[in-house]
Image 1 (cartoon, rainbow, N blue to C red):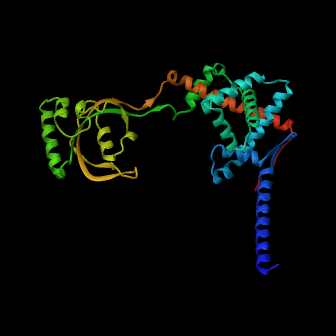
Image 2 (image 1 turned 180 degrees about the vertical axis):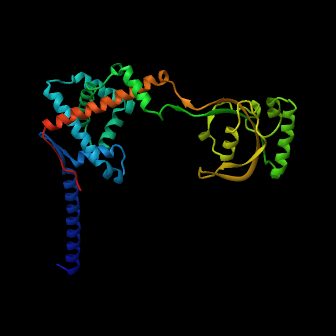
Image 3 (image 1 turned 90 degrees about the vertical axis):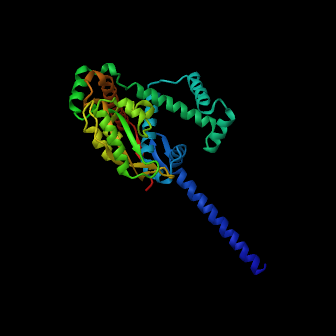
Length: 333
């Protein structure tokens, strides 16, 4: 055997050994038992596959592994409780849900469905089993749900009174504008001069709508300057514009004022354009800030309370199941 041949043989042997070592390490990681619920084990491979289906990054996987393991344990406990009660899901119901998923998610294309399963390393039988477990878990949780009819009016009122900062309404106004923009590089002083002439006409009694239709470069000019919607302070980006607008009362007209306009950049960001626009504003309508009346938010509070009670009931129920069952969780470090 030549020295060259011997060196090549050793090299390839080393490569093959390294490959199987890595493969073995990966198999050990996939088969690592991360939880045991009675006689059912949960492997890292199951949890990893579940997170892969959601396209999680490696960082997200590391952060949310514990959450997914706990969720899997809760599901297995629920299924065990379901079986212990002697209940069963009819095969026809599972088949019906199976076909619904096929139509909803894959437009009835079975080949596309099989390709999807294959790409995720799952068989149709495994998919059906997961679907059955999902149905059972949802059924067991639904038995613990509080209907909104069970939430008393007294509890709704107590929640409304306690949540002082909730259900607040913002101060809003509906504006009309006359705007003078730099279209040929004219100085700001020229724009202000044009605006003052229009203001003089307004003082003489000329209707705002007429002057807004005939003057300036507002995008709302064909609507007599009317924005057409109510806006809050947070919806107006420019600080000076916001200050001028909300200082006015209903029916009041502002003095001409100048703001530096903003423009969208190629990268999607919004920055100052270096150009000025002079505005005259009219407040058509104004709504003061306050709080929504209880009757208007009653259903929303009922849903919130029902959801809170439901979550509490589920936690207590799952807690009892964990005490009665054998549960061991060993997350990888």
